[in-house]
Image (cartoon, rainbow, N blue to C red; front, side, top):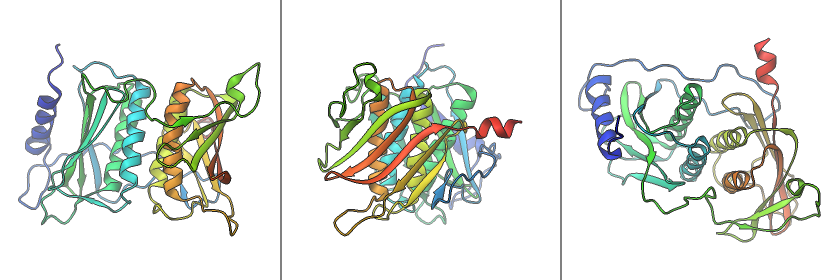
Length: 331
């Protein structure tokens, strides 16, 4: 079947949710159908952490997801990369920030893909679309595509207590010239920091923030094998979890699992001295968003260790490693 216009398809999905799925709004009540519960089971804690695993769904939060089976497949790595870019931008607004119906549509274009979000909640409605709803919505969306192994054009309707909040969509944008390569940032990448004649990927490499040359993230890859998707999904969940902290707040420690529980991420802010800056949640979000496309560009397929640097000072450390939780819980 021929793939139709993205805008037409999204309009059709929007109408479907309004007229058939049914959502409560301040303007009236329509028939309602319960959406499937796609939460991750369990509450594994491997360390004392200020924010662990993934943000919890608020009571009454639901996500209705529709995949377009007629659309062409999307490379999974690109799905994760554009999702990481969008979650980073949403997270900087603050966990409780409201996106109102009068606000312009949010769009994030990268890797020939576009993520868009917009509110449908009337101003008099009790619940309004917030950053947390968007981030949780994209996690549900990625979870569903991963479970079905179907990465394609998709739309999701966000709801709270049967009240419609807004929509998230992801689709190809033909002719988009922004970040069409595997690299989704313009970070300054330095040479390896130590000689590795036999295996360059074990060298420590530094990525400098293009918007603040004082800030950088340094990484090296070694240890057990991991896929690029394993690494990207860990970064997505780490940024989503860090989003609960305010931008200026000190990130003492943070950790959790990706959606398949195949990897574990750990980040720890180092105790600052009088002359050092704090590792803030904003730095964590920014550093991880710079790291993600770099790992894809370099075809990294091993466990990764990294450090957050500011003006040469090491502010914190982190790692993405193989998790044995999935195997142990399956026994």
